[in-house]
Amino acid sequence: MSCWNPKVEMMPGDELRGLQLKLLKSLVYRLYSFSPFYRERMDAAHVSPDDIKTLDDVEKLPFMVKGDLRDIPMERLFTASNRELVRYHASSGTTGKPTIVGYTKHDVDNWSESIARGLMSCGITQDDTVQVAYTYGLFTGGLGLHYGAERLGATVVPSSTGNSERQLDLIKTLNVKAIACTPSYLMHLGEVAAKMGIDIRKDTKLRIGVLGAEPWSDGMRDRIFESLGVRGINIYGTSELSGPLWCECERQNGMHVWSDLALVEIVDPKTGKKVGPGEKGELVITMLQKEALPIIRYRTGDITTMDETPCACGRTHPRIGRISGRSDDMLIIRGINVFPSQIEYVLLSMPQLGNEFQIIVERTGALDEMTVKVELKPEGFVDDMAKIEVLRDKIASKLRTTLMVNACIELVEPGSLPRFEGKAKRVIDNRRL
Image (cartoon, rainbow, N blue to C red):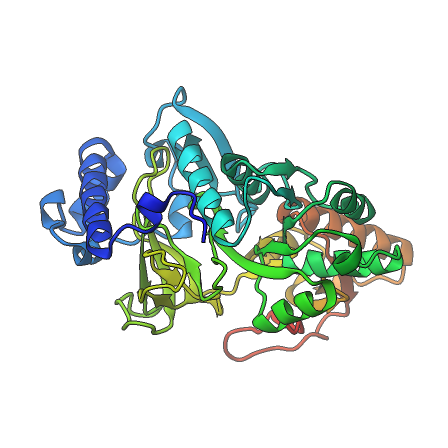
């Protein structure tokens, strides 16, 4: 077994927890002393740095949620000066306003270190070529994997997304061993390869897929291996924390969370209280060494489990299980986070449209397709098909700008969509993951 950083990755458990406590106390002290935002939060929760004596005392600290990052001015959240910042990334935003994350050089170094450890743990080495087919740009997937693979010493093919035939040419020509992309896109590449007469199993060296940014199942992992001969490795991260951070090792029994970089809790989504060992709950993360945008007890909304028993690979860091759902109503379409509230925001901004809409998600082949059905207002319901077509294109364009995802638009008659006495069921997800 190869380790990128064996001294840390195989640190004895007691020593690791001691390091976590030291980092947690330092983080809380720093933020309480120098961040007015965090000082106000802690004062409101009646907790001070002196109250953090054990790792369990993290529960005394207040939670952070996505709304905090979206609604609180950036200058209050950031603790690094503009001179210290080296990069920004941003999410697509839940109401048209993106969540912006800043990074110092130290933050990017730790992010790269985290990915490098994960890539080596799943079997990628300095001798391998890694094709990064996640989107580059404000989305964290592309550059996150890119920097991590470079830190490892692997050769990187920064192909980004799209142009599948070109992707396959690169995989074949450059003897690519691993590809980082969404699982649905890897399945799509398999379909395109078949049309091109390429057998990925026989005609290429591709053997590892570092797959994430959308929900997927063990069933899809099996299908990918059976059809392509590629071992699917689960990777996890969120843009608010850094981007992709942790992945499975070769044993594939959970994603190793590097305890020197993050402290993980699993809590009941309703009560916020810690659940028992191995029980399912919401993933809450404290980033122990972030400089530009520190995060304490961030509620990710992702439902998972945590396993702190020793891993057969020898690494001592805990593992989180496959994400099994969300505590909110977020969808992931082709690797992009999409909230029904985003769609509602766009639709309600157009005076021709009524209040009722429905989102239908299908999987066509290996790719997700989203259809938005929306009612016209009675005065907007006209027989002029040319006007209807113009309106449909305008809605699609606005949604594409807001979500960064294409949607098929269906305009329907007033009163034709279902009504609900309780909470409206806006989403019909027909995907079988």
